[in-house]
Amino acid sequence: MVADEHTMTEVLPLFGALGPIRLWLASEETDLAAQLRLASPDVLILGHTIGLEALNVLTDKPLTAPAPQTLYLGRPSDLSSFPLWLAPHATSAPWPDKRELARSWIMRQCARRSTGQIRARKSVIRTGPLCLDLHRCTATHAETPVALTAAEASLLALLMRNAGRVVSRTSLAEVSLTSTADPKQRRLDAHISNLRRKLNAAAGSCADHFRIHSHRGRGYILTVDESAAESAAPVT
Image (cartoon, rainbow, N blue to C red; front, side, top):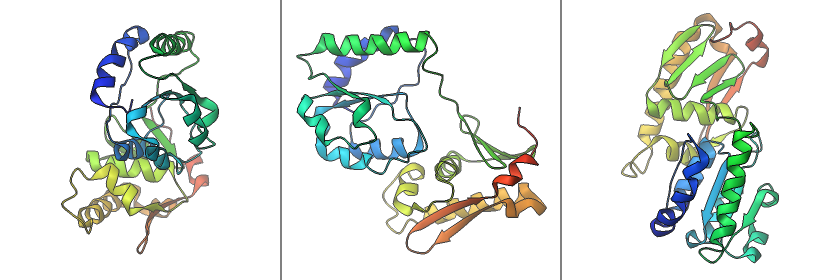
């Protein structure tokens, strides 16, 4: 949910019946951009106070994941500004005038979850021969586990979800750096260097199955040999 603190306080009680969930809260559109690049939420709630400018950060959402069911707490006419990949999944319920409509929408999400239509979001990502467990911050290749820092795991998750495509330095910095005090993003390069070293050490002679390449001035790209996944042992 991305909204101002007052709206969050009023909306959160409506989730009471949803059961065990992973809830992510933010009050800035930049946080929304970072989260959507890293994760694929089942449900997205947008408060109108973040401004329609925040929708600009949604236009670059990769199409490799399903669009979340979205509740927009603003005017129905604003839905025309939503990006095409998200608009068909968005419902408007101006807040607080349509409180009961918002409550009804959330209850429908409860029903979908209870009937299994919404599956628990997995923390495990698989791309070619690589497997990443975000919860444990562990990458695995052919049964060889690699312990990662939280920043390295976040970087690898973003690269794996966009395998074969250049991911900008800005996007990578947003998910891995906790401070803007490093304008040249040297810490980002250090994280990538450490990530490469750990993955190459685990892969050994099979290191050519996946590579993290640098595109000068643009970002990084993960290239994966999909056929190598067949020879990699399954992860339990």
